[in-house]
Image (cartoon, rainbow, N blue to C red; front, side):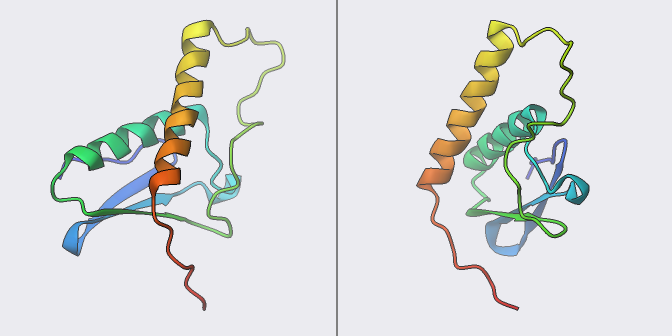
Amino acid sequence: MGMTGGRGFEVEMRASGIALVTFNQPDRLNTLSQSLKRDLVETIHQAQLDGAVRVVVFTGSGRAFCAGDDVGGGFDAHAEPLQAPALERSQNADRYLRRVAGDLPVGEPRRA
């Protein structure tokens, strides 16, 4: 299987077709930056095309699974605003991840 991780997450293939995606920025509570979402979309596409992948499991390292969008990471108040193509790609990634997440069955959290 050719799935690879991206900026802020790792992908591990396990037995029986399980792809384990682990968000690995616990110091940032595993927030989702635009570059991470772009890489995550690519990873999901790879999983959809890979016949060996039966299920994708998302988990997070540290004390938070994922705190949501990274609204502060790398923000520069004096930087130029996103140009239309970059802004559109960012919004498309958000819409895609929401659509995919809405279609996924969600398991019960494991209790310690």
